[in-house]
Length: 370
Image (tube, rainbow, N blue to C red; front, top):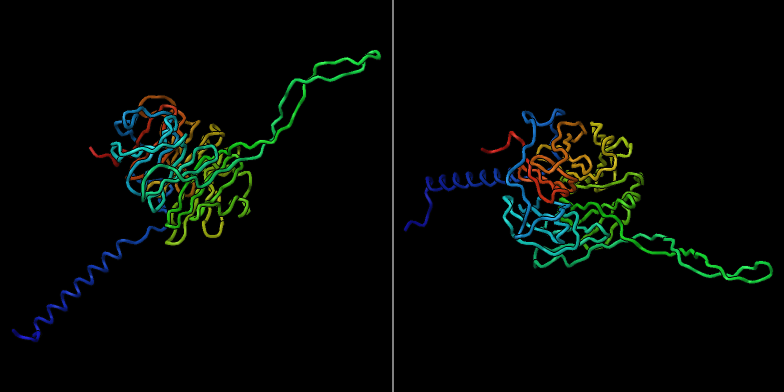
């Protein structure tokens, strides 16, 4: 056997190596980390007109009817997670609605999933729970529990003596006591960092504050808004996050109307700088000033906000320009009743239609497959 490589063999070897290098470089260039939301035109996505309801509507899971679900999220693992609040459970479904598993949680209201596929939910009464992906099990880790000091005035019957015409007489009186007690705070939203740092952001609407929990499972900043000198009256309700680079991301808060001019507050995770985005439609301020509003974003960079009292979903560009809305009050197909949760994934909008005890899915009419 010849121990030497001739010139033709050498040329062939070099050529194959060059082809392999090009393939590797090409693959690397196609797997870039997402940076920031897309920036669609002010008129929205070209060619679309409305969102249409997908059938079937999800009304049950694992043999039980849904009961006033308040939260829904499309996870990084491709599953859909539902806070089935009235049934004290979190349900995991496939994107086509097949039941996968469920976990016991008392009155879950909002849920999110981090990049390590851990699930984090709030119960609306001051407690945040986590279910670790590796190891499975239930939501048995309480990451955060908060309460607020409140003075409550109580009444009880009593007896007193008074001097009447020189005689001491007992009379019945009401004794008022002031008691210090602690009540749960109103946690209305939760979102995980879109990076792998395991930071979780919890919205406390009672105190108008945002609490961030770090990887060691304790509060990093008890009041992120005040720490960053934000206005205390921002009234946050819903929340989402999205990456802006490989090391940073933005936090998006929806705010109650109440006559405010700003509908969204976008906070930079690294330095706390923020900007307010006015939503360019009167309905979301004037018609539903006290509406519960959760937020998500689609593939085109539009914000989708669900309004509980308005019974509809509004879509805005990232600059706040209104593009369309869908939904109306009722229980029929295409109608909503006090929806509390919204999420987007795989080209589909998932809505927790709380008052109708169901999950409704929508897709753009231009994206439906027939």
